[in-house]
Length: 68
Image 1 (cartoon, rainbow, N blue to C red):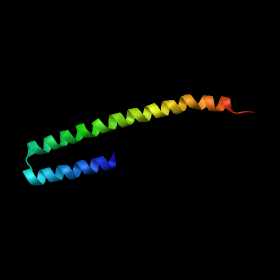
Image 2 (cartoon, rainbow, N blue to C red; image 1 turned 45 degrees about the vertical axis):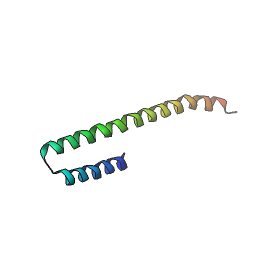
Image 3 (tube, rainbow, N blue to C red; image 1 turned 135 degrees about the vertical axis):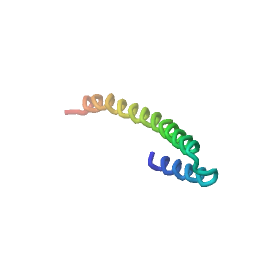
Image 4 (spheres, one colour; image 1 turned 180 degrees about the horizontal axis):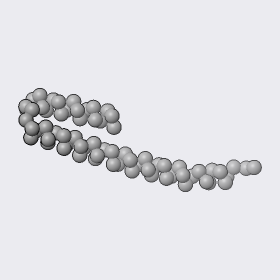
């Protein structure tokens, strides 16, 4: 996420440097940055939650399968 945010920041600075620093353009860039950040964060978090749930389901099976 940090790298993605850094790339978005650099793109935002490039756009502001190329097209001006008007308030409207700053708002558009900030809103798009937030939308894109959440668009990446939500699927990443869902996949992390699924992996965590899968590990939790496997843990009791691994303990039960151990001899002794």
